[in-house]
Length: 192
Ligand code: IMP
Image (cartoon, rainbow, N blue to C red; front, side, top):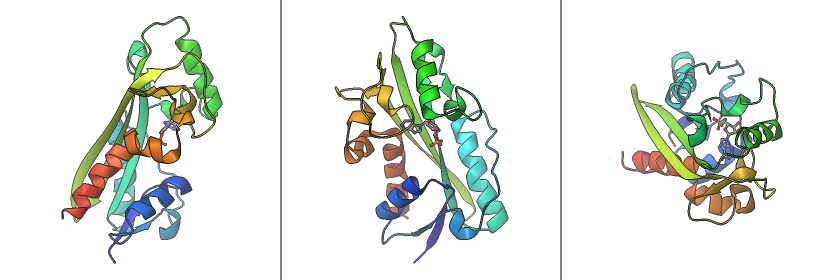
């Protein structure tokens, strides 16, 4: 079977992608190819950071590769935290630190509109491709739910009464930014 690298150390993302690509590609993680170097994601866009990760693997290991990058863009904060979502509250902050900082920044603010955006960069046979997934919604007034990670307890997707942290994994994956970007990637690979 053809092999492709998913430039991630996140075991959950890797497992999920292996299930989705079963029978199509053997998906290898960074660990599987012996890549333990730190990849510095210092671009100012999601697309730029996804490309940095995919290019690192393709250039150094000469393998086809894809990588993803996600950000939460809040309208009232001019798109922040965006590409800085992981370290919104500081370099070594926790998910809870980020959630608390965002709720504080939106205290008393009426416009709670926000969107998660994921960009996947794919390097295949010497060419580069990008796939984007978006999920619109709003930031709640307080945390609800215990499932998920990151900003899930305060993000309520449009058309739903629950936050991402109150939905099951399957429900979230079907409508989430990452789920949608991944569906586009899979459709592209299946059509080759
Ligand atoms: P990454 O690019 O997938 O590592 O995502 C960057 C940051 O965005 C993470 O550290 C989380 O804080 C946040 N994030 C990404 N995806 C999600 C999600 O599905 N739910 C909640 N937060 C997320």
